[in-house]
Length: 164
Image (tube, rainbow, N blue to C red):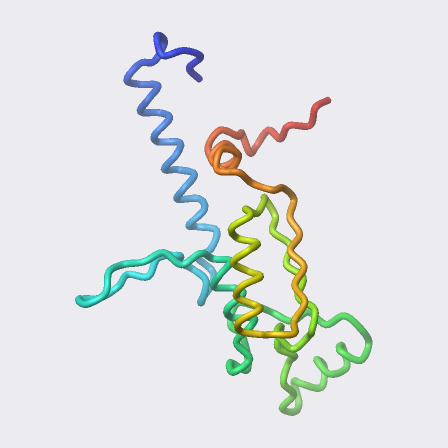
């Protein structure tokens, strides 16, 4: 709402900072219902400092972790008649749902965009934890640092750019 530094007032800068923090709170609130992936911050302890663990890294590690029988926040969706019958019978007897990492092809689609470093992180994680698995990372955009900040803070999400 300010086209030049000469028009910048204290009220306009306060409103801009309030909008930034409102956007950050909205992003955090979007993951509140999750049990496992609800935070990207590791609080640390008396001997270890707090750290940052990206959400995408958490999800890929969970997919590649075949030791855990039933992922908490990742759900298997039945696709065929056989899968639907197995799901139906699972109410009456012990049937394990397939683990997301069981398939030799992993397709990840990132809505909103993905950075080059995130694609490399996914490739490296899968190569070390689940060798032999092919990974395809798809996204709605390839993000740069500038475009990520612009999409996060400068875009009016209620009025999409339709170019009409």
